[in-house]
Length: 399
Image (tube, rainbow, N blue to C red; front, side, top):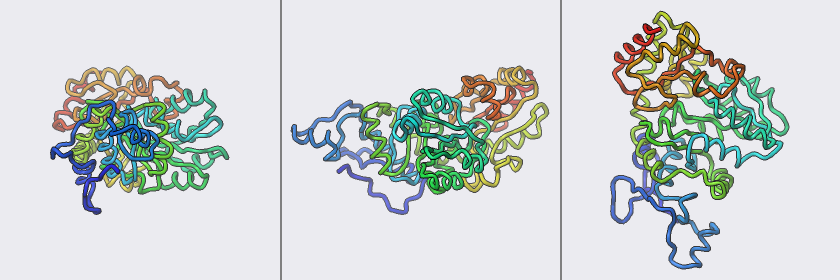
């Protein structure tokens, strides 16, 4: 039996973020050990056979089990309030293993039309060619989700807040719809992380993460994870991992593990700066509309404050006058913001979603998600707020 860290049962999130994982090795290291090994040695052939047959818990092969990866998985599961977690090679791999583990040809998925563009492509195109059916509905309209339910519906998939418009879905309402239909609710918690939001508390069954974003926090590695019950993770996901191998490398797991230690303090600081930036942007000429859940003007502001620990997160999107030409000129005029579609970094990033994160979608799909050509997304980092304001003004003056 793989041992556990001896923590108090009532340890709070910021403590779990620093302490949960595996006990130290006999060497007594204080910082978690990095196990760069592909395989593990067994004392004899009979023990090896038992371990490969899952009759004895042990590490066998790093494709589906490694001490460093398990430390990250246990820590993230504890922070999300779930029983278990499985690390994956990327956030998209986390979504892929979820679909592979839970669906077969003829099954039906209901998905928000506002999710990340690659998620839409994966569900609609890649799994569609294997006979998985899908319907895309308004993120914020529970009635639309309920109306889309079919006898073969197995999953409801939402991302809240959504990328890039920060639309917030009612997790509890969607959980009720899913469970009445005998389906599961999957929530992508990338924008909030467990520091702000724990979807399991509102009835979600599975939580998806791109560890590349806030969990790492410094734009260093690609990683993903799925959190949920032991029954689902061990019974459905681990067998797929053993066969398909979308594994999280031990090094990347270690980087995310260390990133989790500062997750709470980063998210609180970045969320505060993002709200201040969003409030300021609402007063700036040349900006048609600003999207941030912390704003009183946000359509789901009250719901967001309930689900997200009273904080809006670190992503701000806004529509620049002048369409694509105006948005590109504004982005190109900045000197501090990093022009990249990644987010969750300590460095503020700026991007044009219509031609990057949602570039593979049709214009019809983009418009259905509210991703117009003038939309700009800023993921606020840890720079000085006044410097960020000056940089965005510099960009707007370059139009």
